[in-house]
Image (cartoon, rainbow, N blue to C red; front, side, top):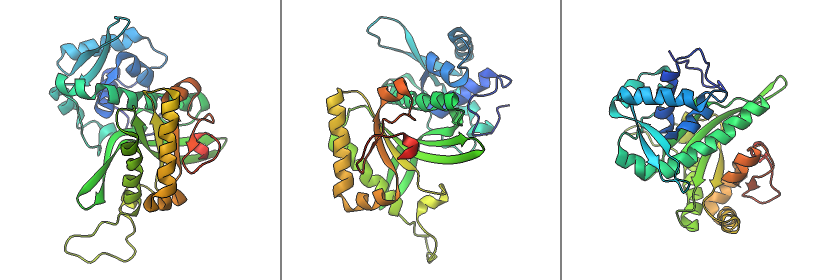
Length: 300
């Protein structure tokens, strides 16, 4: 049985690794063998995860796609089969999470590059948390979280992150919406994501057929005690181009009235994925979208 605790930095080795792998793929959609090892058994070997994954494949619960590689090495990206997805629905650690499984080779080929990039971001935070004694594990990262923003429209975060900073006897719980940009969309479309989050910040759901209570507040309070900070993680282009995309995000923060209002209340930052992986997200690499010197994401 997988523990339902949400803030375990590394799953306990006492828990069946087979169950953890299934839950990890249900949670994160697609992951390579190496990513699964770093996520679930950072002190373990690649062969250990390979044996479990291949056994699950023989049982018809997982499948894989081979990623193109310039070095001609075979990297496998794993995902659940329909039967594997069905089996994970009742796992306690996934209870209440919306299912967005990838259960076919076609879906995997379409979603693999972006999904693997999102997993890379999660692993950068998780490994930094382990190094610092903070709390952020596989179940503290929920991909593809959708929220209504009114007028029949929705915004979908690439991930919602839960993270606990542990300093001596003090614990500080932080949340963040994470947007991962691989430079595949225009800079204008990327910046427009800020407008969607500004609409979410202000959106107040109207009860059907009933008067709305005057003190009901914005809809996001149903899920979050405070509005999560918003982190953009960029990759897939030259440093100069990524810097320009960050500048465009800053321009949207300075110019759009809804986003201006959001920025007064919510921490907004952007960083480069390769910097996160090299130095760890708590280094001073995050550019505040309201201006100022780079700083750790926890200090935005």
